[in-house]
Amino acid sequence: MTDPSEPGIRDHGPQPFDAVLRNRGLTNAGFVAAAGEQITHKHVRRAREGRQLTTRMMLKLTRILNEVVAAGMTDEERRDFTPYLHRDLFTYAKGRDAARPDPNAARPAP
Image (cartoon, rainbow, N blue to C red):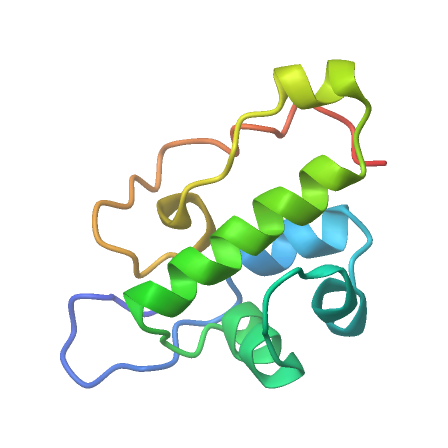
């Protein structure tokens, strides 16, 4: 894994975003199809692979992920769901706490 503070580094390796999508059984195509906003397969691929994205794109992908995950839950599961923050999904995001566990790790994926 690369040090995000190193200047010029744009590839950060597989991201927690990828792990969340895999655990939820979401493919790039499935994620794009379920998104209520304009997003491309290329955006999702880059996010999963760790290509550095702008903060705006990280926030957009995080918002879409929270909507897609919540849409597949019952009302009870939705009450217990903790929305992801972009810091939870991207290792190079400012304010990331590597020691913070996945807020939804204890909840089983559908």
